[in-house]
Image (cartoon, rainbow, N blue to C red):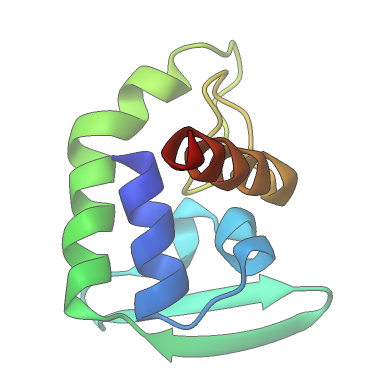
Length: 105
């Protein structure tokens, strides 16, 4: 679920992996169908694609809580690592590499 949400944000909202990993819960504005992206002192508001909305809402409703439960202090990032902390771009690259290697044989 988390990986689907990540992929849909990158592809459907034209975000970089670093931008998607930096998103916080407060950046998700479902009512306005926009997403506030902040990184390195820059800020932009992007429209949310329907596929991204569905995937992120599913992640927030069904998946995020199980990841967040691993920490004493909750993390305010939209996408979390398996340990409940911020998801890092290098972790996404590693997941992509492992998936590619599994397909290659």
